[in-house]
Image (cartoon, rainbow, N blue to C red):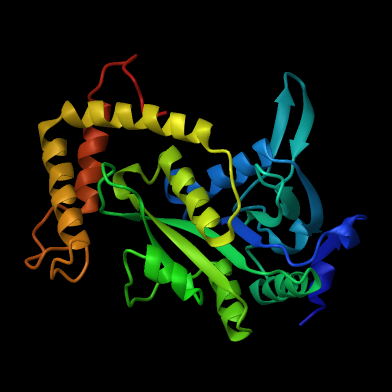
Length: 306
């Protein structure tokens, strides 16, 4: 393996970064239901004081044909270019507490080398804990709090917060690999996978970002400003509820999900919230199709989900 440290460039002030901070990781990859990770990353960098500590080399890690950067065309010339970035930041929370934030795109290439590079940075800065967030679609109702599945070796978080503990195979992302390596090193780490209503997975769901930030706070003690996200979430919920109430079939499907969810949370003997014993309850695809059909039937000018 080539030198992992050559994948990034440290800032001039990297040696001044306090040791023993918490690391939070949020990378956009093949799945980001409810745009949870995207919203968290943008919100933290938009609202909190931050500076780059280490910048990763996109030419080594990124497949530009799969995720193209943005270039701006102004009538007859190109006026600006926005590259995709993957950086480690020093950030201060709402109370001024410093922490490290690894955010940007998920690398397309060199996962082993990238993971080794991050492990080197964790060692260099004597990181106290590592916490990461991810979001997947699930057939759960939007009328109930967003649940999380917690992985890692912080058993107190798993016992207190993990609502679904499956035994299954899933497509990995690079932070899964990082968590796996951190477990081998017995480094305190936790991964929070948000369970987002399937029929809202392709929207920008503000409550998903709120739950992600609350999860990180529970793991680190960091405090984040979430008033704007919560207000957006209330507006979003009002629009969704109005649209569900206006469609009898969709309301019935959401009601069924509510019943399944509540039974599961009350230690119902069902094996998981995904199916009933007969496997005959509506699927997430059916719910998504109902919602899409209802939205398609609305007149131009009616409220959207935006």
